[in-house]
Length: 430
Ligand SMILES: NC(=O)N[C@@H](CC(=O)O)C(=O)O
Ligand SMILES: [Zn+2]
Ligand SMILES: [Zn+2]
Image 1: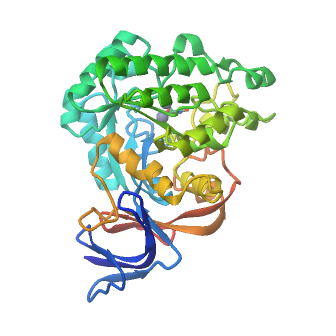
Image 2: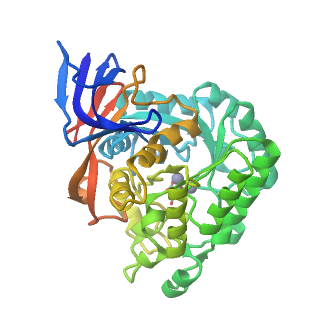
Image 3: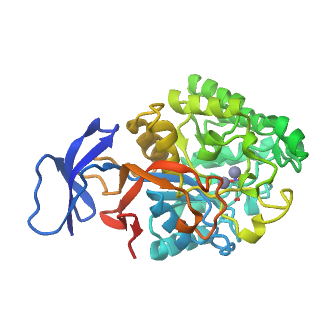
């Protein structure tokens, strides 16, 4: 199958591209990028006015299958991913059963290959059942394609256990992705400790509950040499620690979510909206500002959604009883374009790094670039499209977004995975 994308504005910092060009694709690969290309037989599309970038990646997504299909499943979660412009996601292992062995890895891979609308990289847990006690079958999972290890949803409480996790993962060259949360300190914390917890009369989830584990894990990175990735970083001081670790030359990376960048504890109002209950909690405006500064100066490696779908009935409860998490796949790109690119805070090139190239490098998966020979995973963006976030438009089963009603400019219109369209003109291809 041959496909010719004409007159696109191609942007990819990996190969120094930022110009109008045509892209010729054959058998799932980019054959040529250049001016005035033509095609004898095949499909031709005119993308004048659109931007084409290497396919976007979201390395922190909860697809909920197996076990929590009432919230999301691999079919619906990957449709949401394609709808948001992503060509690949990394699935978190906090399913039921937990992905802590090779059979579970193979299960997710096989459902994804049948039902998936994007690539699904699988992460395995660090500990059996996410209990933080016994190592998971990391070697077996790595052999079956697990790209990373994480106990996401929980912090690993014992430093000695975390050390063993990192010693072990490094033998397989895999990154350990850390959800930093000291349970003894955080307890039943609901919202950021300080002004928000006082104003709302809810138990506080202190910044230190996250920062203690960031500090500890950086120390363990120094001790073990294992690649460390800090998940959903949310505080200014936590980010400073990552900045210092990088300056020291340690193999430490980190990610932020759109909700920690563009929402703060001040957004939780008198309605106690449970859509804004996330883990780690929304922090202060100063923290959000520091995270944006980190996105700009390169301390932040990746923007991920931590897409955490929950049913309406689970979220429609008292704040203390509702589960933590918000969805994000279908709003992330629009939020980033509107708040960071259109405002001139970051370039389009930097966006492609934060939402693509850097994430592939952290996960150690195949590079995708706008160059001949690369796999044709591409995201097509209409930078001018003005739209309002409406839950009725979501492909996700869940509606627990903190951005309903937001007015955004810019969204993905078409997505190609291995040269095949998974979304065309904003519609999922069946
Ligand atoms: N982030 C969340 O608030 N929730 C996540 C767990 C996690 O990412 O820690 C979930 O699985 O629902
Ligand atoms: Zn987490
Ligand atoms: Zn998560």
